[in-house]
Picture (cartoon, helix red, strand yellow):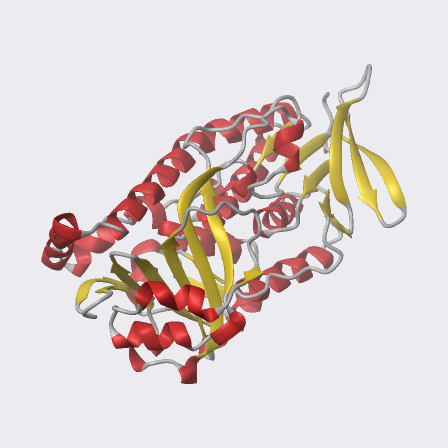
Amino acid sequence: MIRETADIAIVGAGISGLTAALALARQDRASVVYERARVMSEAGAGIQLSPNASRVLIDLGLERSLSRHVVAPDAIVVRDGETARPLARIPLGEDAEARYGAPYWVIHRADLQDVLVRAAMAHSNIILKRGATFTQLNEIPHSDRLSVTLETLAGVETRNHDAIIGADGIWSQVRSTLGDTTKPQFSGFRAYRAVVSRDLLPPSIRENIVGAWIGRTGHVVHYPVISGFAVNLVVITADNVETRGWNEPVPADVVEKSFTEWHKDVVEAVKVPGETWRSWALYDRPPEPFHGHGPTTLIGDAAHPMLPFLAQGGAMGIEDAITLADEFVVHVGRPDLAFRAFEKLRAGRVKAVQKAARKNGRIFHMDGVTGAVRNAVLNRMSPSALMSRYDWIYGHRTSAADA
């Protein structure tokens, strides 16, 4: 198949899918994005956009739209969960922007989603079709094209495309259709999240930082969102119950019971959301790259879901998007070659980040003697030395982002 352009379908209008559509559109490649939800929403959660992600979004022309919503934290501060003793401080703010050439931002997912949706809908090269659930993918006989079957409000529809990008998340139906019927692996941890008014929280939780409190029963992460008027709280605890939902309401006492012996600021913060906590079980996949075949591929969590202990899941999907769009330009009219080149370029990096996220989780949840050793090591490291440990992640650039 040699064509100047390819008719591209993207399944899933999450962060990676919409970023991919915008990145392709910037390269004058048209796409249609199929999204099963009729109303786009990302309720009740924040996301960290480290410099490797923010530089891509800025390069796509989204800085002005995002600036109304993002917050640039001053630092990442790690504390002992029981004593509140500072263990490590990694400078962000101006230091991070000077070091990496792009800011470290935090933002509410709903605000990021809204910016991406508006940008996609405003672009003539992007069609966003909501209420369209992907169910099947088939090769068309005697053709290089593929047919996609969708369930819509109008009934079952079939559309033909030159290329298919699965961006439909950790439980990807596209991945299953491509032959991988294995399931994501349960980590043994559950996350609870809430977004609460900044004024209701203790001073240490209201700071303009990404805070991480670590201890023997889990850890707590917090950072400002909604232009600093609210704080995103994430609580991680050990759990042996596997569930697929990611937005299930839970009673406050379920969250509070793991933190009764922690520092009073954590105890107070965990109590503030009351009944507004939402939970999801944490899954990932073995850190091995997934390869599509022919004019199909996967991006984001559909390809390489990872635990949130490095805050890089969304960033990896954003990196995927810009790299994939670059390869469409290099391999004009050959989506199959573009996808294989894209997968080869991304395989080593996402594998390394997946493994690092797992390792960070083990470090966060060390107990007893190993926990004391961890604390001592963190205390001895300078802010500059701590920051340098993340250079390989935050300093990553794609050719498009350097343009």
